[in-house]
Length: 308
Image (cartoon, rainbow, N blue to C red; front, side, top):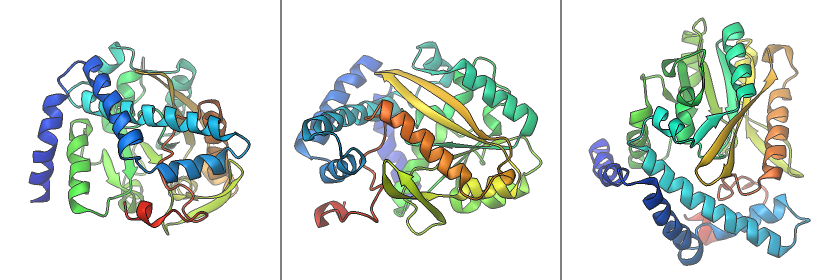
């Protein structure tokens, strides 16, 4: 029932995705206006996050970051819809997503020498379209069938089905998208196979296994599932940053955190990931999901925002 309803909701989006990208960006401006000016989407969450992360910036500067963030979010939404009927190769031909050559070399060499491996990334750039990573690479050492993305399941059954329906065109195998609570079992079962496992590691852990460190000067909790599994299975760990150079132009940047996580101290991988992400976001502040309740354990958001 939920799956059928999800397809009913998704059908108009698939039809609208056939429109040219410039038309989608026109709607993106409308969505930005609605989010920022009409609905004030999670405005207090965004303002609180920015004030905590950038306390030395004045109010005018932080409002500018928030304005740029809303525009970025509106564009990400319409880009996701536009990409629903576009192949990864088509997206690459348009120059929409490219992979930094040095980063591609690092990823290919790590896969050839050490696969399976773990990749940590965050909600930067257009993280949804980035799932077609191999299509954006010049000469990938692995195929789309070798990739698995771990994700947090949604509480609402309808939202969970809609999540999967909107991504079904990018699911190459049943193991392409796996709930995080099932990922360890999958990785143990397929530990001898050369695969790339992606963990989006910047969400609030909500009671899961976590580690605390300092991020933008704030006490911050992180998921540690990717690090824990990599340490257990002697896997290398890489970091991916999805840089948004301008509208419709994203560059995938890749660096190595460690060649074998089992040879590092507990917490090293997560601390390094957090440091790399902070450095990248400091250079392009709007390029993150600031509407996440990233520091929910530190600041009380108002009741109205909590109910959303």
